[in-house]
Length: 416
Ligand code: ADP
Ligand code: RBF
Ligand code: MG
Image (spheres, protein in one colour):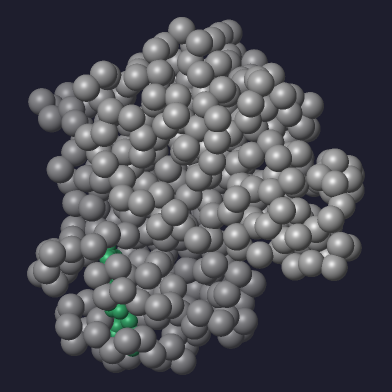
């Protein structure tokens, strides 16, 4: 297989969370035309150029107004919002890493050049790394003949990077982007931004020469080492620098992204009541998990990237702050229908504490959720997660967050 020589990154939905802004504006515009935005309309438009998005949305919803008019209606609403689009988890970390190791990379986006500038206007570091480095390559939607799902932006990015398509690895969130990169003869890692999730992309084939090789829940789960690229250097606890084992691999759940806990740029602070779970934590796994009331944390839970995390926990107003490891997601092994947030607090309690308020500072990403061939394998993995989290929470900057003021605020049931 051709080694990966360059990465090509999508922008919207991969690096920037512009999807929620677009959905908000699209809802308003289609409502003006007497329609409601559907999941299908959102899906077909995702990742495409603005005019093509609107023509797809109009077609799917049966709006008679021309796409040009819908686009013109949306532009002032969006223009006011672009600069505020948040960075997606793991995006800045990846871009910093690529720039630091001198790996060639490019942006291939459906966004027109002027909108790209608006989106970057308040992202100084990101803009510097993406667009203002010597040799930066950014190809915008209005700089090629055809938009995604055609391969034009990707092929132009590869041409400017001077790397053959077989040597390019594309990171994309949208079906149209994955299709375009595949049509260009490239391998694609998909990080779905679309609520419909990974089913859209079928099963990934890790050994494919072209097309989708991997589907990941977030950029935090992306491991450059899988493609023979230099591994991230920020994992905790730090790998020994002198020893013979340079790989950082083989440790606990970290295996899937190279070993270790990733310190999070944006720490999550969550407070909620402890409620009854599925009743299998202690009984089936021997691992009690204090399920946090999903209603109390509705917003944060919906937004949080699924995965296993490390952090600090305080029960009610008790004086102690404990290390914790936690799972946010759907528990693929049990195929839950509800997204849960379940900390296993690394402390031995005398009795249960249902109904008490739990305050959590979630500061490290351990690994993506996974499925397992047996209950024993799941339990062994959770114990490894706990060990690696214990060690990581002794390291800077995670260790300092034990003193986070959020853990000391009065813990009303609603929290902050
Ligand atoms: P459920 O399915 O109701 O969550 P579990 O078997 O997972 O039941 O047990 C979780 C309960 O056990 C928690 O709600 C908490 O009251 C109690 N508990 C005791 N020790 C711990 C611990 N170390 N971490 C989390 N919860 C604990
Ligand atoms: N469930 C899964 O299906 N897959 C996992 O990878 C997984 N990892 C977990 C890691 C930790 C640290 C914890 C505390 C739980 C994890 N679980 C996982 C959830 C576990 O299945 C759940 O806590 C029990 O089913 C009890 O509800
Ligand atoms: Mg539980």
